[in-house]
Length: 240
Ligand SMILES: NC(=O)c1ccc[n+]([C@@H]2O[C@H](COP(=O)([O-])OP(=O)(O)OC[C@H]3O[C@@H](n4cnc5c(N)ncnc54)[C@H](O)[C@@H]3O)[C@@H](O)[C@H]2O)c1
Image (cartoon, rainbow, N blue to C red; front, side, top):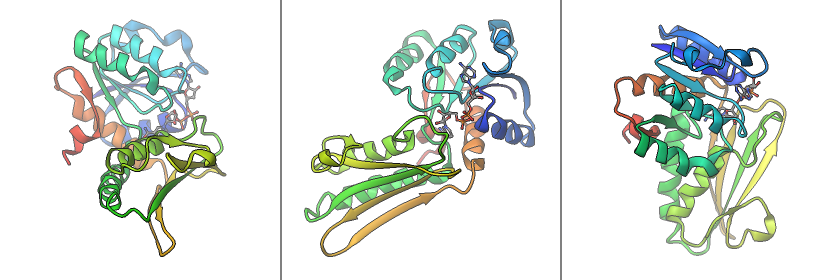
């Protein structure tokens, strides 16, 4: 496939490597720090799909430019989810194609499933409370991570003693407390703990590198080929 990359940072570089290994052609790399002048409709139209990993405050404008050019978008940028209803509307009403996951790693998506399953079981045992810790590298801009938000939503759907998530310990009685740690170059670790006086039950996902994330994004681009317009996610691709 002919792929354009928007955002040529840590993820952009990793995605380029994997896309080439899988036989794709990277026809364009766009990054505001390097070549903002190349961000044109004509250039975008050279690609069959765009893979976008930029910044929370840039993502939505980038999607709109790709949609105007009529090119499907795979995005992994986190921290823009307040605009999600607008993007869904563009897909539904204006025939645009968009794939989003807060985490493209296959292992994390298995972990998402496990998290929901565990929350459902723990809902029946009143003596347990729950909290989460997410640890990432010091360059990460958003807090909590998009993955932590997805995990919290998975808990909230199934564990009815909580009514939201929070970063504040003072609100932890009614909400799922997320402790966001920023440390060194950690690629991403998420742990969820159900705790009681008697014992704790903890599940942990530890990423060893960005490779799984980049591979998932390229697989999502491959998945979109020939698909009708719409809003897609990992559940569509992995068919759990
Ligand atoms: N969904 C996932 O699986 C996943 C995985 C890793 C990172 N992320 C998210 O992806 C995003 C990028 O992560 P990263 O580690 O590559 O960050 P990074 O800072 O290394 O790279 C981002 C790049 O985007 C560029 N950029 C900023 N604004 C732009 C714009 N308007 N147009 C084009 N380029 C622009 C920056 O110059 C930079 O080079 C972050 O939001 C991060 O949280 C998601």
